Image 1 (cartoon, rainbow, N blue to C red):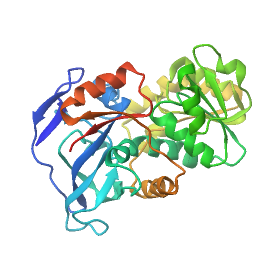
Image 2 (spheres, helix red, strand yellow; image 1 turned 60 degrees about the horizontal axis):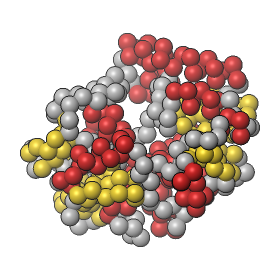
Image 3 (cartoon, rainbow, N blue to C red; image 1 turned 90 degrees about the vertical axis):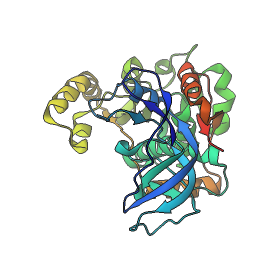
Image 4 (spheres, helix red, strand yellow; image 1 turned 30 degrees about the vertical axis):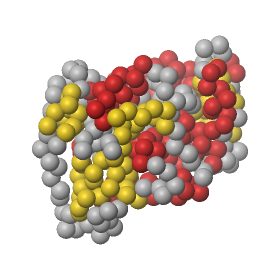
Amino acid sequence: MRAFVVSKYKTALHEAEMPEPIVGEHDVLVRVQAAGINQLDEKIRTGEFTAILPYRLPLILGLDVAGTVIRVGAGVSRFRAGDEVYARPRDQRIGSFAERIAIDESDVAPKPTTISMEEAGSLPLVALTAWQALVELGDVRPGQRVLIHAGAGGVGSIAIQLAKHLGAEVATTASAGNAEFVRRLGADHVIDYRAQDFEKVLSGYDLVLDSLGGENLERSLRILRPGGMAIGISGPPTPEYAREAGLNPIVRVVIAALSRTIRRRAKRLGVDYRFLWMRASGDQLRQITDLVESGALRPIVGRVFPFGETVAGLEALAEGGIRGKAVVSIP
């Protein structure tokens, strides 16, 4: 089976022949027709998250998939061969940069009928991230004010639409060239991050979704109302996350140290900081399918790369400038 593999952390992704996936009792075997390219693929390749994601190498990358079910395990009841599906496979079972992938059926949902395979392949990771941030953690309600950083990116372009659907007043940061684009997605206020300081423009916000981390996250705390929440998807991880993830005690100590400064600053300001590591969920994808088919959510595919150009796709994403998602297509 052809696949794109990382054999050693910080080395180049390369094409290789890999063994066929093993299909367990509760698995569906999917012929991959589209796979989203994510910043997380690059972070995994460089070993940035080895403390919380200790993958065995060689590893097939790829965290989003859309395709057709080839066969199912004996315990599978919700899918059958021929079904068109999409998924974000759970962390220890990623590998959609391949011709086929076996996925636990609980991570899988029927593909929305109103969109293409490439559009479906762009959605799972970013849509689940937006859902878990805004619906689960943030509990966003009508009339609340939400800031979404990097609104023209993969997560941002979906999060703007979802926040607007939930009834929020939405601000976002973007370049001047992307201002009209994010307004069409639903942004009420657009801050040109090259010419404006969002901290001087915005105040009293209920929630911030931050995908950049570092200084940007620290400054985001200061635009929140008392009791507001900043959700970081680029880190630093928190002790709460470490406990929920069942990480070993040594890693928990390290994670507590990494996030101590941002947690202290949040406490002094009377706001909350949460780290979100998106989890796979076929049930949530079913709700996202409903939103897509109703027209409330629209996938944004900026570029499509043939399967043989997967490495070029990952490099292009790292260079920036792609609106929404980049996707690998396998005819």
